[in-house]
Image (cartoon, rainbow, N blue to C red; front, side, top):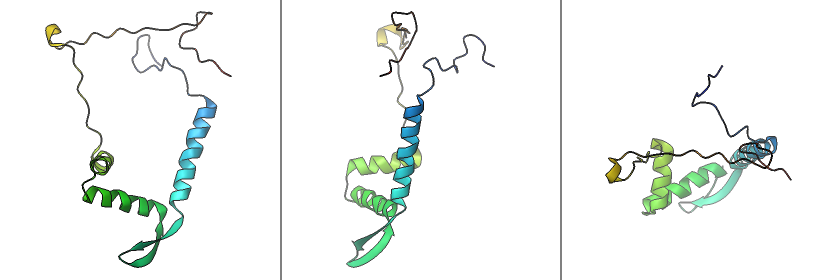
Length: 116
């Protein structure tokens, strides 16, 4: 049970069921499509590989050719994204003041989503 003021409390509410279903369905379709075989040319020969394997080869080849986006893509997925430090202005000694604002609708409900 959460106690009052616990930072782990999700104050934005649960993701809508429609959005959850869409995200899950999209992920499933991408995985399903990636598992299908595709015939392509590699080294002058026709080769059948899973589409996801062709995708990885394409990104890898782009990285080898010096495409920075491909190098970043590979690095972020193998090593993780680099965290970006955040600090305030030098005149405050680097302290960052954060102000939390809650928006309420006409009925006084905070962070309300409108449907429709």
